[in-house]
Length: 393
Image 1 (tube, rainbow, N blue to C red):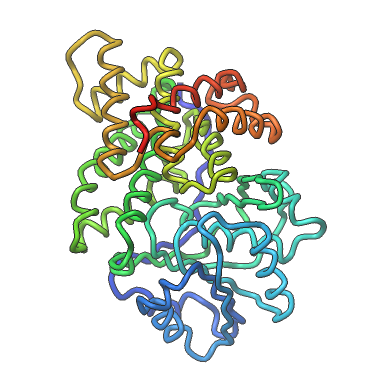
Image 2 (tube, rainbow, N blue to C red):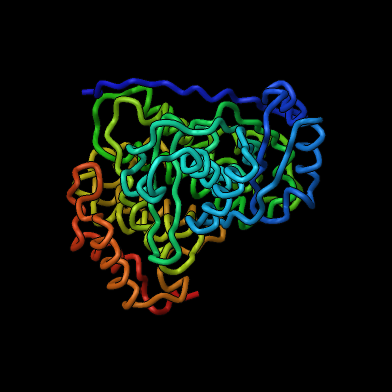
């Protein structure tokens, strides 16, 4: 049966074209604002200019250089700037990595003790945070409307998630036109990331959560339908608007209400990113089809539902329908130009040993909705994800 739940999402979403100008009404007029950025794209595409214009006469500083997988080391530099300049409001301008990093900075800047404890406690040690807002430029992670974040520590190859209700953004400005200059690789990654976010909350076991199931299936079908247009050479407002909103809905908390969740694909994928620097979404694409295969018995009922409702597979016996659903999932990622085997990223058998060792080191020894994905099962998943030698890119 559907599980008990409490749902609360305090983030105000301001969606649509020319909405950045509303920052003037969204941020207190006396705020000392730190704008946190990734690379140079927000400057070169004009987004930063629009943000500065909207902030008007407020005291505004910038912190540049948050990496695609934000590192603890870089973020602690931002924390030092916050303290040095007595910043009292943070504004993330970018995609999920910038937003995740900003959430960590918001908590770490007012944290009593070692800020690494924020991550080792999965966020439970967080009792307060600076207020923050978001201007989203890359639809992918849904971080703009949730209280989750992931941070990597370069020194130890540790990629750790945390969540806390204290780091919800007060608002998220979503202007689809801000995605027009994104490279196709980033759009593809966003599609894959959102797809797997939905799967992690949906593809477990039935609990008669009818609305959540249909919502998840509708969002998955939307991403599948959007993919060709979203990757077209000329950006289309309707395509980008639907992608931006779907990616937010994929991880804003609604799908997770009252249902079991998996997240093993993410935990294994995090180790691949931390160790080898592979794009987060691409690690998910190589792990998920293999995990679906290895866990096909525990996920049997939901795999059949997924096959029928998402991919419209209604012929063949149970095993054949599940096989086809897994194959279609792999084909979806590959249609985005994303490789789905370890060999596609020049990894070999040694990577399996290294990733399993990291999973053990980081305590990831009982993953999945049944907590039955042990290091041995993770090894089977990675071995299957390795791919045949002739599949190498």
